[in-house]
Image 1 (cartoon, rainbow, N blue to C red):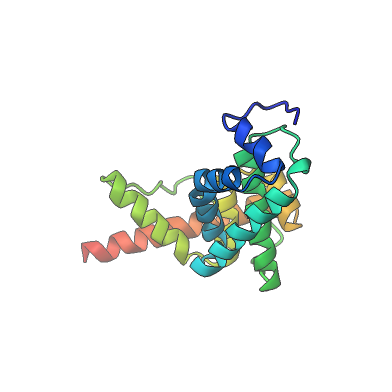
Image 2: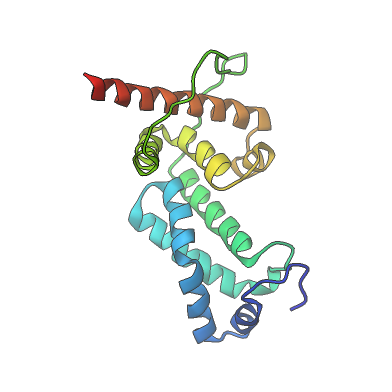
Amino acid sequence: MSSLYRNIHQDLIELCGKNDAKAQFKIYKLYYKAMYNSSLRIVKDECEAEDIMQEAFLSAFKNLEKYKGEVSFGAWLKKIVINRSLDSLKKRKLELFPLENELYKLKDTEAEYKLEDNSQQIEEIKNAINLLPTGYRIILSLYLLEGYDHEEIASVLDINASTSRSQFLRAKKKLIQILEDKKTKKLL
């Protein structure tokens, strides 16, 4: 396997291409947790995320000849996981929120939400993200957590990049609102 990107686990990847079960298991152990978490952020169901992750590994091992080494193996595998997760949501008829005539924008005066303790902040943000409507949560997760840009999100979700940007801004505003509401309730 000639590759433009030299993976640190290149030897294992090449053995996986030869259907070496031990190498496949080692690759699985290296990547399964990150792939599961990526799927879980999208589908929001532990059993479904587990199934998607398993299917993605099987698909990756079966189609390893399609991996050209242009990106890291982990990035290639994550794309498979994300696409399968989004396909699963599409089967559930995911609907993004409708747009008005203008793009939704955050007011310049809106402050960013801040907490003192990092571990507390992370947990509160995770919980708040899970409270977002599905369309918002997916775009926010793809953009902030998975590193996709709006053009990539648009391509994957079959929407316009401007729709992705607008949905992201709405998701961000809704997330801030959820976090501020929780903060206010704590103070009462």
